[in-house]
Length: 373
Image 1 (cartoon, rainbow, N blue to C red):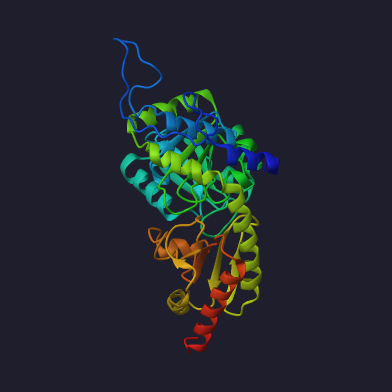
Image 2 (image 1 turned 180 degrees about the vertical axis):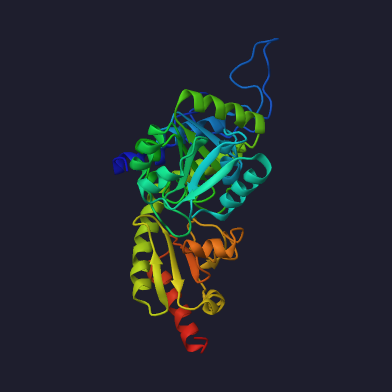
């Protein structure tokens, strides 16, 4: 992580001092879809909203600087950000991807294999020798989540970046769970970073957004062309909302992590919990409950935690990956790498920790006393 005070300052100041006309403190929102041309063949900086927008430019410049990239591209969702990046590849190309991966990404990769002939191999993120064995003549990139979703595995970015460079491969990192407050993959050697901005960056469960950050003239140019051609760009209002959320990211991440570590201490000692997964930083935790049939009773007795599919908001949420975020991955495949039907994922919010612990305690108590063990 960069110097903490600098990181906090950059987040808090994103979008500031960008209004050259009226010196507005809050970044203006430019809704116009079209811009007047002075004469034939002569335009100002903007002509059409899909190609460029002042509010989107400010967001993209800000997140590119934070992630230490050259360019950023604000997309209409996290999945459209992934689609943008993987549109760099062509039929016959081979990609190595994280084994423990978000179900939506797996679904997208399966679709790419079936329809476009882009092939994928999966790696658990551990062991340089294993990674080397997966590299083929047509391998073009390594895509990793670190931490992974939902088993919270981390990968050594510097070692992976070294292997990618030695084999002339792009290193693409999904940095959604850690955010640039904790981890800046480009500083560790990545070429492209992806975020589901819907999660921690926006932080309030009210914005759908994706971000791609890249480094290198060739990649920047290719992504800019594809971004404009596909048109899955983020609207001006959502760009403004995302910036507003990012201003408090450092504060929120501190509280997410502080609360998460207290919840971990509680879960690790509970007799109904067999395993806890935590990557060491951040606000995401997964745990296995002792019996699969306890999952539904446990979910039904929670009061403060919301049973929902997303994460990264100020409110605490709980997800059951087997039927929600990872249902598109066949059960046999999920279980082969440790994602069982007993796994629950927690997104720890910024509420008072005692209230979170109290809610978990009363839920476990009711399950225990309900005679369903």
